[in-house]
Image 1 (spheres, rainbow, N blue to C red):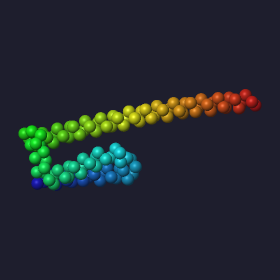
Image 2 (image 1 turned 135 degrees about the horizontal axis):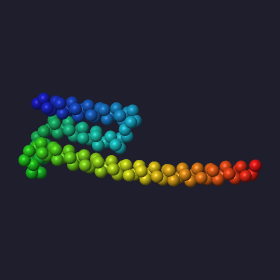
Image 3 (image 1 turned 180 degrees about the horizontal axis):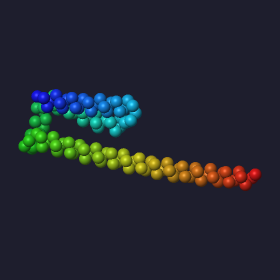
Image 4 (image 1 turned 90 degrees about the horizontal axis):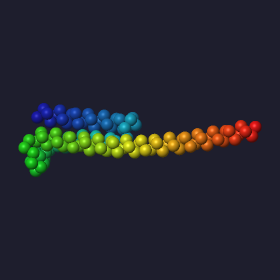
Length: 119
């Protein structure tokens, strides 16, 4: 019974920390959504633990703890894939911004040279 309270407590702390990070604009909702969903799911499965046992049994796991570890591993692999996709998108955006900035700097230098030549 104490483990249920600890799980609910830790999940609630994670939930409120993520909300605070969103409020302080240190984390966007797009990135925080997964953490919020996992913390809510942890509380839900702690309160309704019978559902967790039935789900583990349905998928053929002998022990519920094995199902939990497998699920957590799958979730973190999925989060890692999503974060890699976001990282690649950011790198592509940064490359495009650098290219545009370089073109603008080149054009500005050309205009400055033309202006100096006219003097």
